[in-house]
Image (cartoon, rainbow, N blue to C red):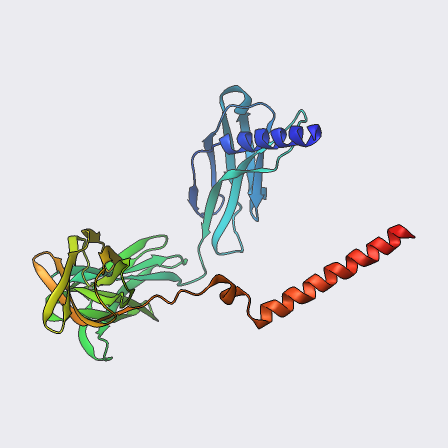
Length: 371
């Protein structure tokens, strides 16, 4: 027990040491050029008996130029790249700290915090990464749609532009947008923008298809966006209640607006035929853009008999009201006696088999002891 306690203390101590290690900078990006050479200063916690870990496919091109971690928590890493690297794109090297450097001690592995060095090697010829961004908006608002062209090749892109088709839920083309046209040089990123005006369209969900042309290439991208209207929909509510009970009356709601809506509450009226017999109000809440939420209150239906009742729910927000009329039902609680619920035929048979096995084992053990 004492050994286990000591091991636990050691594990806690080691984890605290590792988690305390911090490294800055948190990332480095290098655009590859032949025979690139540069030194980078790092800062970490001042500590004895630590090592510097260098990991990654291109780790052989990175070395420790200076290590003053024990003195002031600093060290210097030198990156010296060759004239050519055969793996285009993102090449990652990780710089981390390990417990137990020179001088021995307990090795705990690489620290959880590491600094990635991202070496971006150009692709042969024309090569670009394309991204398409659209935004949700409300009716009568304008949003900026954009296509980003990131030139990762070895040649300049003389011309890049995009045509964006906006498609509604009925798969109809409702608008065609054309972005500006730009040149994208090597290792550069350009954004092609165009404005979309929602006032020409109705609320709903839309698909946007971007047809991007750059150099002699064509790439298609798709994205979805929504046009909102100031409306909150009542999607469901509690419809069955037990007689003479205090129960939660839940109302499920969903916002169709691309902005926050505050002070949302509901007023509920219950009718027997046309006579109002009960009314109550929920708490007030707020809804985020497009958010779904449940708004609730407690309702005491004491004195009301079994049967169906008419209900009217008025949801109030921002000077507007959403109304829903429906039905609720009050029923007699079906309280089952507990042994009827659990002691059915199947459970009784299982219990009998288990008891028989227990009794048999007891008899066998008793006979063995007697012998």
